Length: 134
Image (cartoon, helix red, strand yellow):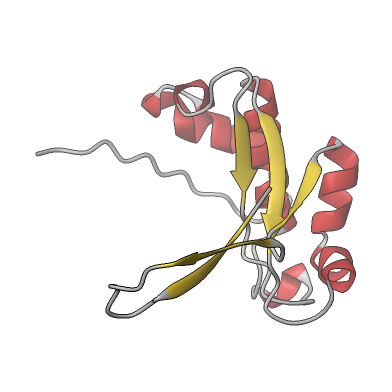
């Protein structure tokens, strides 16, 4: 069995990441091979808490913004969401820079703190799981 892998090097987050990601995905058929027009796509960055992008604790906003742009270009409806582990949602969005991305691209925040609880009485580990709703 073989797999196609696509790798590109960037010097920093100030690079034109959207162009780099477009080039990275080209051998795989582009973002259009993953996102169909009209589909709703949730980008779930790691937003553990209110940490600045320079701390490298959370997903860098430049990456989130570039992927969101490609989703939108492919015709997808883009949502960005998470359930931060610590800190308020507002503090996390502000400090991580993700709030600015949401505003710039006019995409929706998917609050994954709210959701439904599912029970699996026969499970060996997780008998009850709460899943977010977007």
